[in-house]
Length: 440
Image (tube, rainbow, N blue to C red; front, side):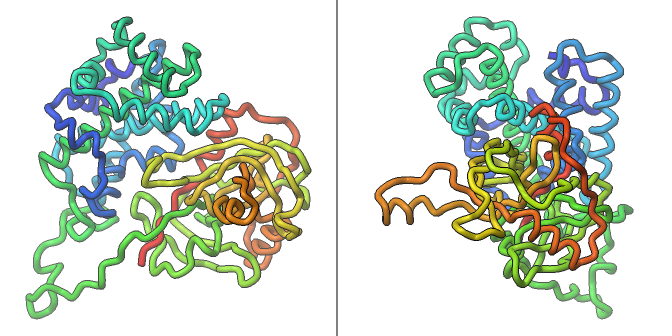
C-alpha cells in the first residue's frame, strides 16, 4: 500500500494512526458526541478535498502500490493546502493537524472506493453490509487492521472475506479487496476522530479564527464598547440536509425549494454560508450562491428526457447513516410523466431522503433533471397491499430551463453524444455536487 510511504504531512498522518484509541467510542462514531460546528471542524479537510474533487488523487496514492514519487508529492501538496485552508478558520496544534490529515486521507479512501464499487454495479445494500460486518469486529480484529501487516496476512483476509460474503458482499476478488480497504479506512478515520476529541475537543465556531485568516480575536475585539461581552445572535441548529449542484460560474447552485423552506441559514458541509438568490413560486426549485471556483455541470441541449435512457443520480442521502460522502446510483427513465404530471418524469435510480435537489445526469454527463421526490412506499402498501420498487421523480428540463431563464442565469448547454465510463461520470458528478445544510 503506497500510502504508507507518503512524505511530509501525509507521512505524519500515517504515524498518527497508531496512537492509542478507544475502540468502544470509535464504534459509536460521532453520534451524540459533537455538535454541528464541531463536526464541521472535524471534517474540514475531508470536505475541502471532496468539494474540490481531489479525493481521487489522495485515495489513488494511498491504495496504489505503483504510485510514483511525483504522485505522492502531488497528493501531499493537495493535502497541505486543504489543511492550510482549514487553519484559516481554526487554531490547530501539530497533533490535531495530523488527525485532520488522517480523516482527510481515509475519508477520501472510503468515499472513492465505495463510489467505484457502486459505479461497477455493486448494490447500495452491499455497501451497507461492509459497515455491518465492521460493527461486529472485536478488538483483536480491529487491532490487526491498525497495522499495514494485515495486507500480507492471508489467513486474516480469508476470514474477513468469509464474513463479507456471508453478509451479502459479492464473492469477487476485486470487490472483497476494496471492501477490506473500506473497513481499514473506517477504523482508522474514526479512531483519529476519537483521539482528537480525547486530546483536545474541537473548537466551536465562536472560538474559530475569522475566515480571512490572521490571529485569533482578542478579548477586547470580541467585547462591547464597555468591555462586556457583545450580544450573540441566537444559535442556529442543523435541522435537515439536501443536495445541490453548481449550474453556473459565480458559485450558483440549484436545489429544491423544499430543501431551503423554513431555513434561517443555508450552509455547505464545511460551514460556508450560502446566499439565497431565488425560490420558484410554481416549481420546487431554488437557487443559492456561494464562493467557489468549482466547474458547473452542463445541461443537455434538448427539451426533455427519453424513455428507457440510462441515468445517474448524485446526492447525499441519509447523511446520519451513510456519512458525508457523495452517493451515486444508476437506473433508467421509466416514464415521461410523474404521476400524470408532464413537468415531472419518473426514473428507477434509487434515491433516499437527502437526495432532494440533486442532479439527474445522462450517460454523457449532462443534466437532464433535478431529483424532487420518491413515491411513498408505506402509503402505497396501505392502499394496495404492495410495496413499490424504485419509483422516483425528477423535475423535467423545460421547468428547470424556465426557472434558470427567469433568473437570467448564464448556464451552459451541450449536446449528448459519446457516453462516459461510469467511473468518470461519477467523478464528474462528485466534483460539482454538494451537501446542503438547513439551519433554523
